[in-house]
Image (cartoon, rainbow, N blue to C red; front, side, top):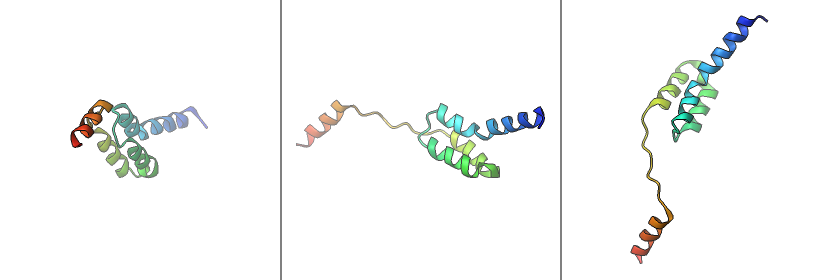
Length: 78
């Protein structure tokens, strides 16, 4: 096999995994699901596009709760 074949294979693998890399870089909460969609059905093109759009969509970050805040909330209930 010649070098052109392997170059095409590598480029397709990089482009095919682009939604997964974007989701992990952005710390997307659904990065596992995006990766699963991309791996299982990404070869169809439509699913790859959906995974790409999903990885680029804005998401809501949940607020972090510390132990002291939980303790305060529990002490108010008593």
